[in-house]
Length: 272
Image (cartoon, rainbow, N blue to C red; front, side, top):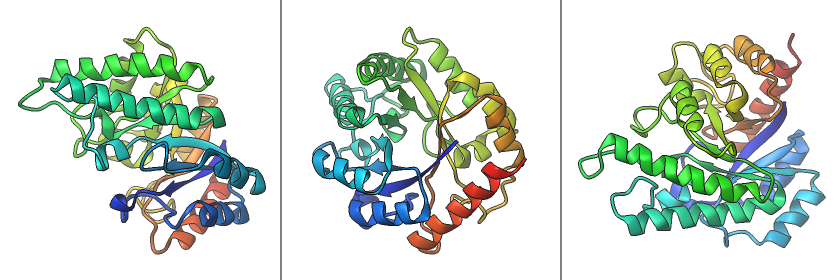
């Protein structure tokens, strides 16, 4: 398993659960100094980062780009994949597609979380879930040209009423014709929704494509009450070799949160 840390470039989301906030260069410098393998970028859109500059920053600091978030499509533009309006649904898919095209050449996958939307008075539950599945089919196939999966994230009940548990996520993915969509298992969301986080990871099995490495209170690992012994054992049992990515509040500061997460990563990945 490899280490990763989140970098937000979306000013409207400042204060949210991303560790680093003060620009790509500073983020890369700190991440490299602390020994991280990769960064995960939450950007306003595909044009917010110059690809050549990013390529050079990653090379200069021996870092990979693990993933790119798509949540700015919701935060900045109020786009979501279950919208009752077909034009807005298409705009949402186009935004995700543009982020796939941004991250793909770096070998990074795009993450769909908040853009999955929800069912409401204008769109009933089966229809909303159908719209989501349709988008995952289309966008998963689009991502395949870069030899990366599309990553889909179940969220807790307070953030979506589409898919909340790993089991529900597995059922959604297994109903698709494409095999190029994987699950993001965020430990914070899981500790709200799952009876047993470790067992849920085992349920995810081969569908697990990314992990958000965070504690029960959405602070860095070690700042809450989650026990990671069984979680790491479960990830090893499903032969997970992807990233443990710190998507957490920058508590008490971004640097301290980054340092705390790396200490926790080193401890738990070396534990037997």
